[in-house]
Image 1 (cartoon, rainbow, N blue to C red):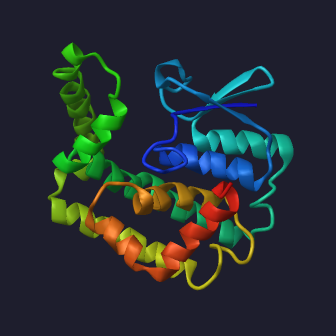
Image 2: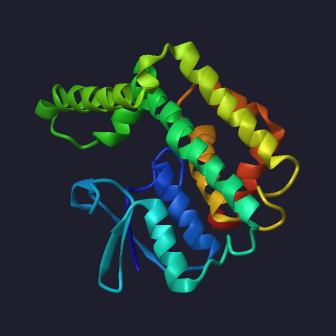
Length: 231
């Protein structure tokens, strides 16, 4: 199976939270794969990650995980009760459909964050294009974030909302090693992608500060990183 995603950056397994989620799931389930650097313009849904497996091309991290569950069995989430699975589903939606966009705000709307992100994203681009392409791409993303809703808020409002997500997740996690006991699930892979990339990424903002200030969240992220990406 081939996994297509961007190359590592900023000391993270991948700058895309969704790619980290999928690769973490693959490592947790010991699913064999090889990574290929992928151009989103070649992806079936125009975004990373995507896979090629047994002649099939599949995009979107959640749809890929569903495909792998159908093919290999539900190796992580099969032990969950219906109530636990519903709770995990709700947590995933909070992280991927809200906190992720708070993180995107820090990279695209904030000038300091965009300067850091653009230096990596547009590295190697010819000088004559650097004057025009990064601002154009940035504006397109900001327009999307405005349509989604997060860019309509003030900076303080955005990060206050993000910190509420972090606090809710922290309460859900409690003192357990993982969200639902002693063994990880796909929802932990999701959390590692979104929360871990905020915590260990280079984008300075109040949500990153909130995550880093939590000994429990720091322990949670570090144990996943060490166990599945430590070598």
